[in-house]
Amino acid sequence: MARRLQVNKISKRRAKSKVRTKKKDPIFVDGQRPRPMYVDYKDVELLKKLTNRQGKIISRRKSGCTAVSQHAVTRAIKRARFMALLPYTGE
Image (cartoon, rainbow, N blue to C red):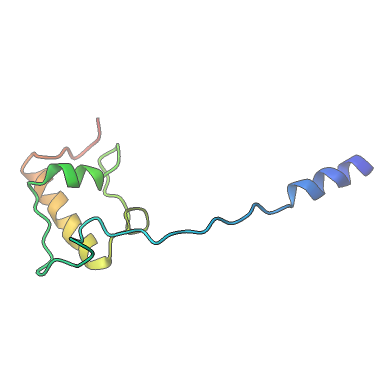
């Protein structure tokens, strides 16, 4: 009985929270938003960084993009897929 109580106490401890740094938008140039917001669909290296192994577009939370730049990235990825520069599915 005493052993069971001890196991429960250990498992209920919380891990220390890590300090998160704010992610930088990969589209910004020198910390400034390019105006007009445009992501070149021919820049395959940048677009590959913003897709995962399965070929899906990475979410804003993971990539660190703002809403405006995420819309531009999505538009560029879809154009690159249509032009056969990026695959619709992963490897």
